[in-house]
Image 1 (cartoon, rainbow, N blue to C red):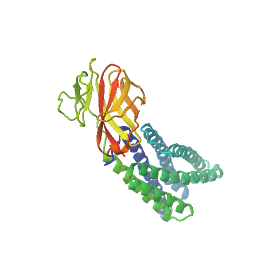
Image 2: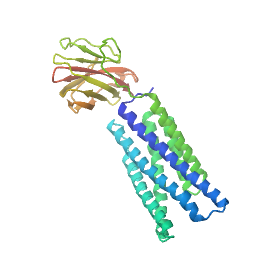
Image 3: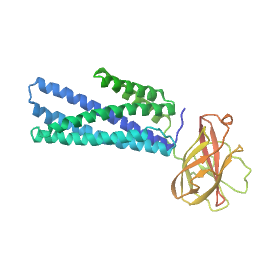
Image 4: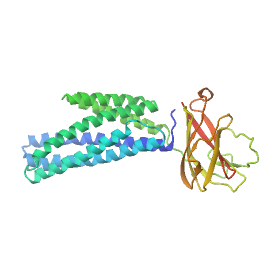
Length: 336
């Protein structure tokens, strides 16, 4: 089972929401075409079709494109904070921004052409051409991005769905309408993939408890016993000869490249002197940042590890040594 941090979960949730927004845009446009055919069959005049169907559907789609841009941007930005750097994230966000701007301009010009009886219709055609061009490029890059995310998390639905989306868009460019259906199927598959990732492991916040034997509690031990090695359990141990700090651990992962990512909340400010993986010889002071601040903290630690000593999915304990004399033991899951 794939485990990941709370911040990764948030990033994937943004991407999933942007995916459903794109699906809704496509469905709205299909409904608009269907209603237009119905109105033509009923003999209603074209201006009435424009005001009742095409203009409202275009406005709603534009709003959803803007929301998609915001969710795409937040999704990849959040994943970068968790050191999941999808190379096309910035490019894709920029393309959706351009697409949003062109969609806004297109709707405004379209509305003016209806009000002014086609005065601005000559400007509308090049805007539509640009909009279609950037839409094709954006959806191709979206497919590549889905594939990269799928490859990172070893999710076949995302990887395959991204490829199908790319093929569908390319086929549609050559005026083959079933390419649009193929692209839509690709979006559905990627939505399923993102949903599967969201269902794998939702973030769990550890909370302090007065029961030392509880697996979700914060256990306090004396700092005068440094040789005592705690067992690998879902608990968080804080030992100190100074006043007891209140530190809550939200998540922790250790990657195969030796980088560990820890999310904690603290009611104190303290300096982190060093870090070690308990029951091993691995020690480091490559820690960013090197201080724990009051509130939420995202900490990155770099170890030089031997992969043969670690098993994917197993839990290990990383100890933070603080300047105040406290030791904070944090459970992390190893991800190959």
